[in-house]
Image (cartoon, rainbow, N blue to C red; front, side, top):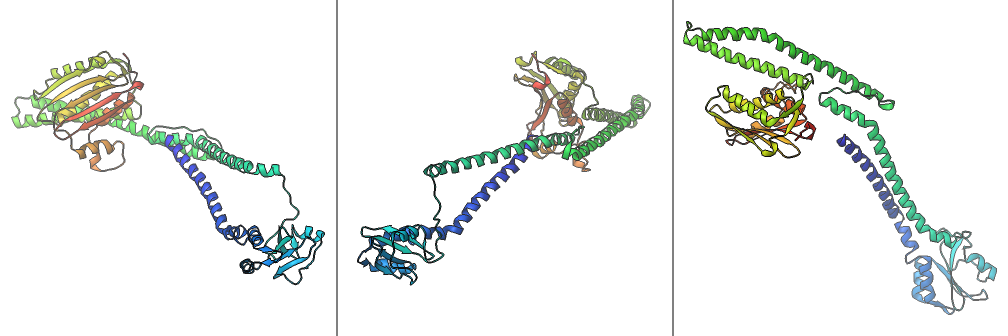
Length: 458
């Protein structure tokens, strides 16, 4: 669910970044488009700049040559009016432009146009400097006026609008994210549940109803397949027991028959040992299947793991284990009285599988240590040996490759034994975890870690 929310957040964030980049692109495009115009309007040829430059180089007697050349370069005409409206002098003034004006004429063209020429004026000591620009070069708004209060409010308005737009964008992002997660969250959880091989049920109305129905159908089909698979394994296990018991019985009789030759008796013992292996394999297969499909009820009770380890070690030593193997017990004082709410039979089975795994992979013998540690948060049950250990490739295969019961792959390298898979299933049934550590020549260490959810008590 968290990864799905991250996925949605990532794409919504990408959308927000895209919008910001789009706005930035618009600003850049605006700047590129209007840069030349703005630079002219506020550059050397702008009315204000030309008025200031010309006024410093002109008086009632005339205009300096440099200023005149500059005006001609930009096709600007000029005239200097006296207080009475007479022209002291003119520069390139078009013929249709009058040479004499009264106060009303000046009032009219000072803020607008003179014969369709946009004109700009500058008050001089001896009169009025008038500059005329080419037609259609500037548009003058003669009838507009703005209040000082409005002008003062304009920067605050712009900043406020920017902040409000940013907040609206964030609000839209947040609401969209919440709605998407709210609508698709149950779907994501159901799909994750199906991926774990467990049934899922959805009740969603609206646009996602069809998808929810498809998930429910897939869950129903998966449940039927799992049930059929579990029933088939259980049935085969049951059907094998009778002929296997007969094979083991006859093999035992032949092995005990002193009238038979030693070769025949040894072959019978081999058949009997292999029969025991098949029997254990069938039992493991059936138990793994029941745990996987939650068909194995757990008989939970408070278990003192320290006592369980000692009783298992004593039983193992009394069973006639080879002298090549030594069993050690290491229980920390903090773990001596620790209790675990679990199924003692299954935990003993997990311990036994790990010990037999050490024995099976170290035929030359080894020292096996059973230890228990209480960290306050977890109980750690460890089965370690000082045997041959595992190569990095073998250890990686055990950790990464799925067992053939968990994969449809037909590769033979997935067909390792059921022992470790059964241990992992037992750990999971007790809300715990299972891990293996090993190095070549330094033995193997297997840990079952029971956490708070396993109801660890003192």
